[in-house]
Amino acid sequence: MTHVAGRVMLALGSALCVAGVIPLYARSQDPTADIRLVGFISEPREPEFGAVFDLRLNLRVAPGVVVFLPDTLNPAPASVSAGPGEWAVAAGPSDSVDVTARYPIMAFLNGRVELPLLEVWTRSAVEGEEPGARSVSAIPDQGPASADLLRSVVVSTGAIQVVPLAEMANAEGPLAPRPPADVLGGNYSPWFIAALLVGLAAGGGLLWSGVNAIRSGRSAPVPAVSMRRLSPREEALTELDRILAQGWHLTEVRERLIRFYAASTDVVRKLAEQFDSQWGMSLTSNELLVALRDRWGEAAVVQLQEAVAVAEWVKFGRHSPTAEVAEEHWRTIRTWVADSPKEG
Image 1 (tube, rainbow, N blue to C red):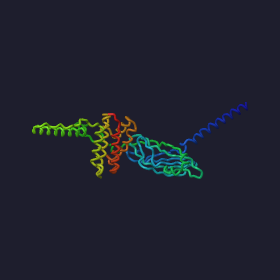
Image 2: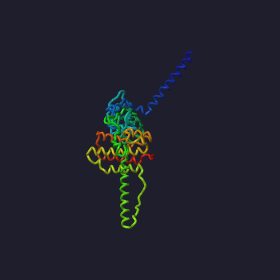
Image 3: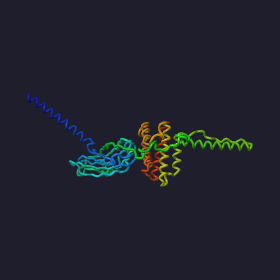
Image 4: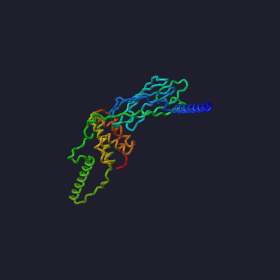
């Protein structure tokens, strides 16, 4: 009986050793064990829509590990890095290294927003090398042998609550001004009115030419007039070109800069109405981005997010981009209009 019990205990001991060694070996091969997120905080804790805020990350690097930190974070569906970050190191417990990093972030949706991802590269420190943190720009200096040992680690940084701009929260009705309901209706199209006026002028010119020809006793020539109407997309591109030609963004007068951004984003709203009659002027910019994303996916709005967010920031007096930056946002909107889904 004692002999059997001894064999059972030996088998159990062997099993426990194997069970203990295998997970330990697996953890040593798992690059996520090289670095982990200890905590994070945003300053302010609940940033406003479209405002730049600081994301502070507390990271712990395992003993004997070299980690290469990026200048910016990988974009999330509704948040991106707004500039290069900075970090500092300190000694951690049990020969680990603690890293405190700060990254400026901008979020483009209200409510719960996933933060950008931190992608780092890690490897084991070679003999005589000091473990800890390095800049990702130092990787080329490591040589091909060290580069082959690098492991990519993506660290989730969590989520925060984004609140509307105070001006947005207090605003009543849609953000864009709408004309009085008794003047051509509450949802008239300025493009249609412009086309109507041009048509009337052209018709008047033809009539006058015909009257003169009859008076002179000859037949009036009938000019070739194209009857093809511009598509909504072509009308939108034409309107954007007209907005840029106005030069509203080239002056330091805030009202003209606001007009530039408001008119540019209104083109997106009016084009969106071709896809869904519930969209357009009746939605806030934030709601419109959500609707576009729900219809066609994240790729359909990723170009627009920053331009629309900055436009809201400008319209509520929180930001004054340079002419070059404003024109770049206009170009982003025009590219989106040109490449937007062909559904209509």
